[in-house]
Length: 386
Image (tube, rainbow, N blue to C red; front, top):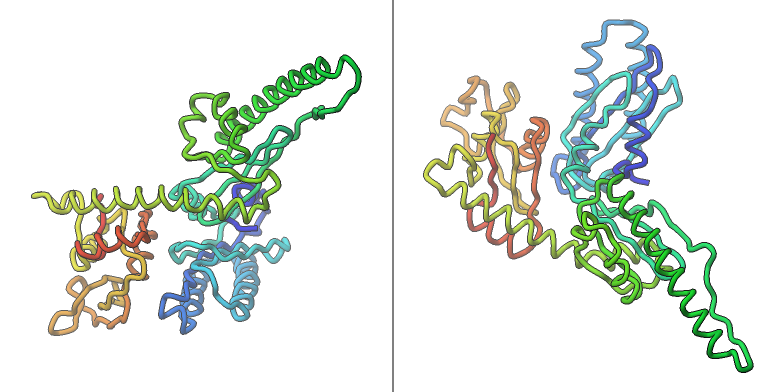
């Protein structure tokens, strides 16, 4: 079960602090697409973060706790084969509290040693990605799913009680009995769908659902749509035919074309807004396009929303001293900000993403082929400014 699921984030947030036994929280980029990661560079990054944390702990007892937690994390990473984009680790060895999970999105490298798990990056990740609610219903049962950040979670279900059944009768009362049963079935069905509507309303609020997909037999989804509260009905983006006993994986796959279409439309709006804003006379006040201008904005701490084309790689230079990022080096190969030597990097994109995330910014990866081509033609990368 992914740490991005609502239930597990809630459990981490509600964990009671243990006296003088802090939790080590680690967020680490492990994306195999990053060349440094493929060479095991994430282990060096982890080691530096842990050493920096350790240097700031003066209490001998807390230092011992930290060293035990850090040893556990290092051991796990030595045996780990990266598959996702980021890794989230929470550890308190003295309380036998451990959690490690790969995440399907990029998070900035961070390490914290606090009384409770540091979950802010998880909350930000959930808030920056739209959540889709799927209700899969027929006349006797309904199941509720939440799709977010490329994963699906079944969060609840409801069954009609008492269920109705059609029965055959014989004799002169056959027609009348059949009509009575049909009316009774219709009444129970109407009541049941109203219960489903109320639960969907509650789930929409609880999980902060942005968009809703109604799934099941066509006549059921149409009827359910009619009885939804206006605030919920306004979030419905599609009705899909789907068997009520479909597995979660099938629900996810059938919902994907709808989600991808919506995401493509959103990406198009973002890129068009970026290009329009950056092309105006006072572009530097709102947005910039191109690698050099974007890196300059990041070095100044002004970039709050980075937009880049999926699969983008760009070579450049980095200052180890002040962490400045440059698309090209001056003739003396010295950093223009601190005059220290620069190091050449085959790809600065991942460092760029990390810097923006660590400044409490957000990133937008443009995946749709036609929108990506539009962004590539305009400069490949850009940013909205603070």
